[in-house]
Amino acid sequence: MRPLPGWVIWIGSAVIGFHLFAILMHVLAASSGPWVTPMGDSQDAGPMFARTPDEVLGPKYLVPLKMSSDYHFAGNRPEAFGVKFEVVLRDNQGKEVTRLKFPEEGANFWVRHRQARLASRLLADSPVPPPEGEAISAPKQKPPTISIWEQIGDGSAMEVARFRLKTTPEHLIKRDRPVYRPSELSIVLARSYMRYLCRKHGAASAELIRHSRMPILSAAVLTDPLPPNTIADMIASYEYRVEN
Image (cartoon, rainbow, N blue to C red; front, top):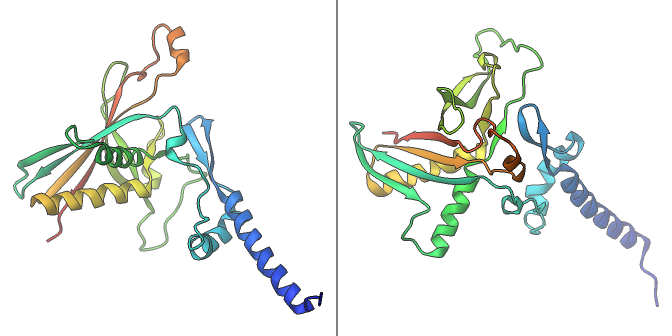
């Protein structure tokens, strides 16, 4: 059998090496966790040397090949939060038009499943780590801001903890309690769904109210009394207004 030319072997080896490099960077860039931290459970991102090439190779190379999944699915978490949401639609005067609850009780299994998946994606909160130092903005520039959950009142055992989404400068975030923020994906999903419902029902504004509850771990049955907020509901709201 006639041997392959050397240049074919070199090109083939380069293609195979590039493919394995893209997969290796994607594997190393995958987040790990949840890890127990003083701020609560947190996901750790992969090292920067892997995330940088993965941000380029992932969308442009692995996605067309359908090899971009790291198999870290939200449904693989056995100790998941219980979550549902409702959307309040209002007119221009702020009067309530209708109130919709999801997952819908009368919907078929497939619709309820999709609505439950949407609700679970709205629950992707993460702790805001304490700043390493006080950031000083450039002259005539506004300080960097961040969207966080601001607690309304003090939640305690057997009560409801209420939160609202607030955009605040990073250096003004209070550190006397854990601070959490929603993921960018959950903000996009909430605003997109509220925009769709406003267009469908002819409303001028919408408020998406998320109801969630932490899972009760088996060790809680040995604790008397229960720790604070063990069975407390968390109510967090997103707001959206139609732009004229």
